[in-house]
Amino acid sequence: MFQPEYEAMERPQLEALQLERLNSLLARVYENVPLYRTKFDAAGVRPQVASLGELADLPFTVKDDLRSAYPYGMFAVPLRDIVRVHSSSGTTGQITVVGYTRGDIERWADMMARTIACAGGTADDIVQVTYGYGLFTGGLGVHYGSERLGCVTIPISGGNTKRQVQVMKDFGTTILACTPSYAILIAETAAEMGIDPRSLPLKAGIFGAEPWSDNMRRQIEEMLDITAIDIYGLSEVLGPGVASECTCQCGLHVNEDHFIIEIVDPATLQPVPDGERGEVVFTTLTKEGIPVIRYRTRDISRLIPGQCACGRTFRRMERVTGRTDDMLIIRGVNVFPSQIEQVLAGIPGVAPHYQVVLSKRGSMDHVEVHVEVGPDVPFDEIKTLERLRGRVAAEIASALAVSIAVKLVEPKSIQRSEGKARRVLDTRNEGGA
Amino acid sequence: MVKQLTVFLENSPGRLAGLTRVLGDAGVNMRALMVADTAEFGVVRIICDRPETARRALESAGFGVSVTEILAVEVPDRPGGLADILEALGAVGINVEYAYCYVEPGGQAAIDVFRVEEPGRATSVLLEAGIRVLGPDDVYPAGS
Image (cartoon, rainbow over all chains, first blue to last red; front, side, top):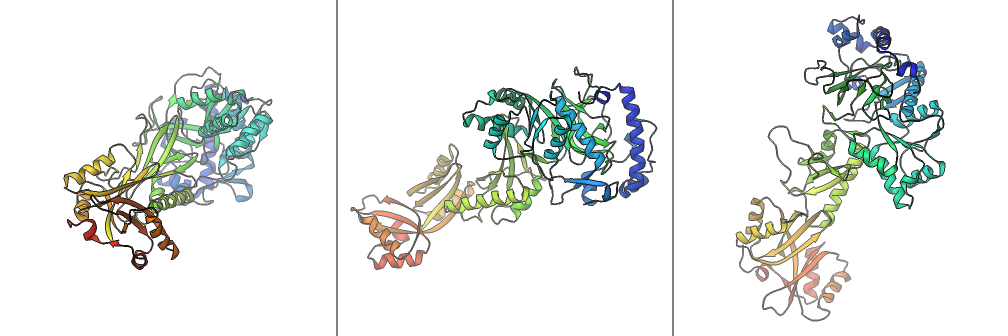
């Protein structure tokens, strides 16, 4: 444990600390962020609570609040106190910006150090940071945590898989940080290069930024002979480091000294009984740059009752099992079907009939956009069709910053539905498409 | 110039069978059929006796069909017959997108079907070279 004084704090003490920090936070945001003052006033609530239970009386914060405050409208400190900004992957054209004070960066590094320690990491480890560096929080988030813990930190960022393998082998990487699907690609690439991935010195992986399953975990652990743990975070709340599994692999410990987690019914927005599934809501207790009050993540999870064998007293959230909106996470990038629709609308001959199809290829999630070849497409020549497919793929890749396979399908083969079109077909739990 | 049907098909079992069954049920007789395939889809090109009937039947069965005007020529049934034709087109810089051929029952010559960039100019070039270019009546005398 990196900070046992917090991570294994007795619950009554922890809750007293949360309450104290919550009241301090409410006073700060009411004073410094016009949006919260307006929201609280409109709801007729005071920026003060007598118990943690009263948090449920406060208004929610949603992604649109951040969008309409773009870029700096929700910062709670003057820009001179901000030392870093990150940005969430743009969803419907409008990206959001989050700012960190020096103190935020310090606390973030602590939380990521906890995460790496959760995977069994110590100052003796060598951490290969294969998450992207840049506006995305993944790379720098893990980087600072790795340095904080005292690990040798390899800031290799994503891409160039052969080089990843070579570095892993030559530098003696013991902990890999990347998306779970990339971990599989690294293992496969090592094998292609004639390097037995199980013979690498790797012992653990901290994987996140996209949904994955226990099957995939077992596959990664088998291929690389490591312990694979799930990490969770989102830029609006912090970035990676919000919650992390420990080596017990039985849920993700939420850093509750810094965040209050609530699970609410996405329809009624009322808290669900402990242990039931619902939408995850976070309040950032210690964030200075851009604190959020009851931020609706749209992620579906539940709190796991009982204590963990590792000794941490922080409650555990289950691996995120879905979304309350239609957002897809493709290789770490947030994608809304409406963005794909926008791209297709600009290409003659393909709109409006398309479908995003999610399926399993082995244990990997596979995403494909199916586009009907309509009567407007002059499809007599193969090259016309190939050109059309290439254009759709290129425009999607350019607009969404992620490449998605495009398949041309027969006219009228995409199921028509009455009312709202079913733009996403998820066959992942039907034994493949 | 003659009419060719082009049908877009997904590369999956039974699709081609379904297509030909629709034509059979509509009483359409095919002269030639050519499948161009890629990993995921195929394009089926058909010359038949009643192209318009075929198109309507396929469309009402839910197939994506387009009708393309293509160049059909009679090729002397001897070594080098096709080469003469292609050389005549190549000499004036006309590119052939695709080609296939079939033999009319009882005929002495093979029939070659071309998709070219400039069908009008190609027709004149071939006529000048003394090659017989076929019209609708030669290919589907039953009419549509």
